[in-house]
Structures are given as structure tokens and as C-alpha cells.
Length: 346
Image (cartoon, rainbow, N blue to C red; front, side, top):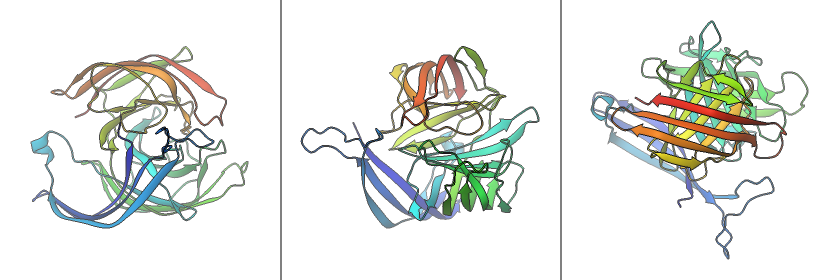
């Protein structure tokens, strides 16, 4: 089973839609789970996460590489570029997802951007769709509709929100679904319960995002209470060479259920996992309120794919899973049952 992880930082220096070429620079960290030399088994740290060993590759470049346009391939071209430093150390994200979410009865559309490390730290930026190019200050408290940034170290402490901080948006294409920006912020607990302060600096992102579609749906029960999503978005990315889709949903009360599955998943039943390690895992996440609790993940459960039609790009399935804090910092757990979904990727 492949266990190599590529964490890519890429700067696009030229993108020619007439000639369908792309040029740029890149560096990446190639990582893998450390194994015991005698037994060959993966080594875990005291928090239950795999110990990661890595090597950095710098000064890479590519020039006028041909890309296949959407009109010919039937699929859009996706960007997934993200970089930030937390207290001077690089934030080594394992996955980045971006998707538009409709919030509340007034239907505020917000682009939710989440970068998550393999051990559960999260950087999140919420960007209202109404913004244009320009520089904007983050707000420290949000009802889900405001421009804000959040850092959570997944240690059981409070989420730290931007105060102060700002984002400079250089491109915000709502037709192609593309955002290009730089950002920074000082993260503090806005309610003053946690004295921790973090400095997030040198933030850069260039990401594709998806708009919610009324043809996509997901429903389930959470501890026996019906969960009906009023927003479904389908951000896609590549993890360890595996193309995955994050079925990202929000209910009217701002609770969230997300499923992360490989795009080319075959019909059948699969055990669910708490994290993406090899790229082929099937992961469920649940947040009981608008603040993302990234450590509440599928500690057990089953995902069954009923169909994956490559001609219509439709994936249909059912699921059930138990979410717990896989790092044992939060005693909460929720039982997700009677889950069903139907999505169309393109």
C-alpha cells in the first residue's frame, strides 16, 4: 500500500487559456509514515498519529506545460495551492478543500477554505461571495456569513480567530470558481478564555471552488435526530496521487456533515477511517455547530457505494459512522445513521 505523501507548494507564473499552457515554480515536502525497521509496522506517537519523516525539494519549475481544457476533457481544471506559516513554522497541510456554502434563510453565500494537517490542525478562511478584488480586514466573531480566519491546533483548546488580520484578494472569479489571495492574522480566543496567541504569516492561496447544486443532496440522522442539508458543495483535490471529493454539507442550524471519498471509488462497501493516510481512505466528519471541530471524525463505520456512473458523473451511496475525537481531547461522540447521498460531480 502506498504511503508516500506529497505536500506541494506551487506558484503559477503564467496561465494561457488561449494556448492552454501553464508555467510556474514549485517545491514540495515528500513525506511518509515512519516504520519500525525490524517489524515494518508504522510507528505512532503518544497522540495516536503516525510519526512522519520527510524531505524537502526546492527550486522546481515547469514551462508552458499543455493542459487539457474543460471543453475537450469534460472536466474543469482545478487549482489547489496553499501555504502559510504558524509561529514561523510551515503549516504542512495534508488536504485543502474549498467550497461555496449557503448560510441561513437569507442565503448568504460564503467560500469556506479549510487546510488540515495529518494530525488535525486546521486553518480556515471564510470569504463572503459578495467580496471583490481588494484588501479586507478579518472579523474576529462570525455568524457564518462574515469574513473571518480561524486556527485550531486540535489539542482540545479553543479555536483562535483573527484579531487583527487581513486578506488581499488579487483574483476572485465567480464564473470559473477561482480565488487567488494572500493573508495573515494574529489568532486569539475572542472570548478571552484561552490566553494562547498564534501568528499566522506569509499566507498564500490559489484555489478552485464549487458552488452548491440543488441536484445534490445528503441526509442522515444524528443521534436519532434528522439532519437535512440545505447546502451541498463538492470541492475536489488530490491526496497522495488519489483524486478525492469532499461532500461538504451544512444544515439550517449550521451543523455540518462531510464525507471524503475517492472520485473513482467502485461499487461496494468500505470501512471508514478517521484520517487520510494513503489517499484511499473514506472519512466522515461532523460538527455540531458552526465552529469546525476537526477532531470529531469517523472512528468506525461503513460507506456503501450503490453506483458510480462515469458517463453521468453521478455517485450514490449510503453510510453510517460513529464520530469521536480521535485524539481523545474531546469526550463528545455522535452516532450518524441512515445516511444517504446522491451527487453529480460535473
